[in-house]
Each structure stands twice: as structure tokens, then as C-alpha cells.
Length: 250
Ligand code: PXP
Image (tube, rainbow, N blue to C red; front, side, top):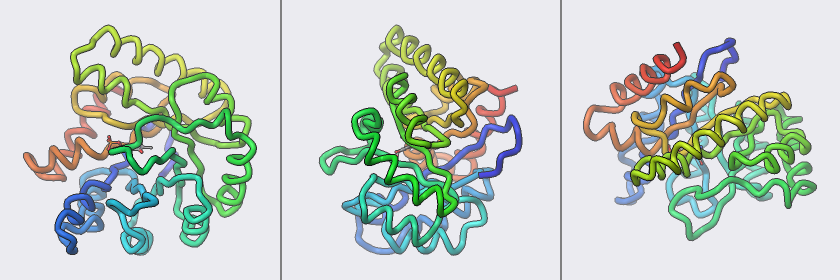
């Protein structure tokens, strides 16, 4: 995604278009068509998570996105040899390393970088050499941020799930505490020279406080936008998110 100073980029995650498609086992709705609509609606990039079990995005989807997108692709993947080989074959603009458990419904927590530093350092080195911008999806935790910095990751993505869950469940003290933690850790990561992204569970109600953090350069948002597209269409759903992000930034 382009690096024009100050602009908060929006990466639209299209995994759940593939979830709906796969519910019937056919080819409709096509995630690539959604990605192109997202581009037209102002997405700065497209994010897709190729899971080990291929429960939503498929290998063929990644082929199509790489071939036809005009905005950058951010490929989310687990730190496995299979995924590394796929990323090295495609060389997407960005690769985001996420933890993955088969039994989870979505990416529940951040990556445990601190306990797996050596392996992860070796894992990301060839991806960086291949020209991919590597980011690491982590909790807002100083230990994980420092470890991500030590392994040579240029970017971290902070997991906003706990903040969004607390908001949705009406636990406002917990939400505010999570927000404060995210604010401090975004500033800390930035002070180490890391580029800071954020995402997971963001909605129209939760996006603005995160978008207002000056250190955050990119948000990745999926499930809410695909859900909201049912009610107002994908283009208008994305345009409204973009508007709220810009308002928070102004
Ligand atoms: N960022 C990362 C690293 C993710 O794994 C996900 C979910 O795939 C998202 C952002 C988007 O989360 P959501 O679909 O809840 O908006």
C-alpha cells in the first residue's frame, strides 16, 4: 500500500465473501469481484487470509487477486513452510504473519513472537528479501512488540479484538482500558521505528478512537464491512468506513 505521509490506509479483508461462496460450494459470490468493488470504493489495499484448512480463501483466489488487483494485496498467513512457499511464489506487496488454530472461528489472539523468536526471524528473512513488507499480528504488549522489533519485522499489526469485544458487550471500563493499552503500545512501537497497523473486529462504532492514533498507518477491516454490505451494499459500506476514518484523523 502506498506510503503517502499521514494518510491512514484502509485494507479491506474479503475473506467472508469466500465464506458465503463456500457455504454452497460453488463460485458465487466471487471474492475477486468484491475486491474490485472495494478498490472502486476507496480501499487502499485488499487483505486475504489463506488459512491452512482453506475454509474461506482458496489458492485460486490468491492467484486471481495477484493477477487482477490494481491495489496491493496483503496476504495473511500462518508461519508454516507451506505458506512461506506460497508467499515466495507470489511475492505479494505485504505478508502479515498471524497465529492459526484449526478449532478457532477467527484469529483469536496475537502471535506469540517472544517465545518463538529464532524460528520467526528465520521465517520472515526470505520474505523480506523477496521484497514483501512483513507485518506481525500481535497483542498490544510491550514484550511482543520488542520481540517483533528484534526479529527484524518492519511492521506490526495490533490486535483490536479485545477492545471491540468489550465495546460490543457493554463492558465500557474494560473497553477504555484496552483502548489506553492500544494507544500506549502504538506509541511505543512507533518509537522503536516500527510501522503500526491495527485491526480485528472494527466497526463504525469502534473505528474512530483507533483511527485517531497518529502512529497508526493502516487499518484492516473485514467481517463488519461484509456484513454491512448486506444492508447498504459493499461500496457504500466501505465509503462510510473511509469517511469515519478521515473524520477521526482530521
Ligand atoms: N487483521 C488481521 C491480522 C486479521 O487476521 C483479521 C481477520 O482475518 C483482520 C485484520 C480483520 O478482522 P475483521 O474481519 O474482524 O474485521
